[in-house]
Length: 273
Image (tube, helix red, strand yellow):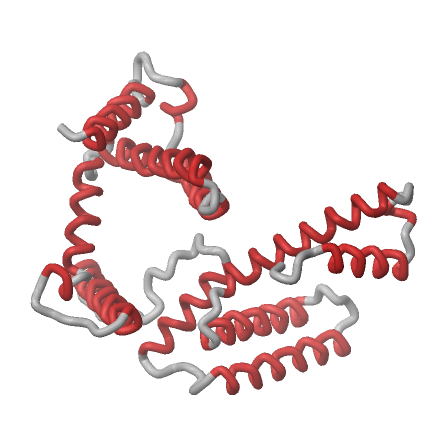
């Protein structure tokens, strides 16, 4: 038995012990798929945050793996499937979706492989829907609702694009963004409250258009926004430091003083940032 196999077996056994109806952990025993799901999502984000720190990444990957083992154990208790079948399922899926590695197909580039991957996924979704419902699967079927809205917007747009419902190029999406921005402004002018249903709807349309513009520009919108968040946080912390060094309380600053601190914070950053 390899080290990896032994470690997995030990983790699976530990999970079974934690869920033991008699001697297990009270908290672990009372969990359900619904109560654990938020932790699973959170752990996935913590993996993303740790990708540049090997030590932290190892820890966060372990936390995420534990979530998989937890879900598999609950499924096994219900007689649905076990961890082994989860591992077998993903193994077989990856073999199936790499016919250029495990079969006789060939691809010339990573982009061509991506197209092939998406085509195979679409075929599998259609076949699964046919088995479940005896009907054709919708193009947008099974886009996870738990995805962040920005990421889901990109995915929905990509799915629709496969059947030809898309803008021809990024320039046309840019025009759509301008159109949606104009409609937000019109909604604001025609509404008594800035948070009216019409304004919210138009802002949603604008955000959806921006997500699809990012897709056409081959920019991951979620990652771009995460980077923008990080940049703002970095600069805001710098402003806090500058204000403290000058003995100035943040809540007493004027708009002009905030602008001055922001400019100083930007200047302190290296050109690469």
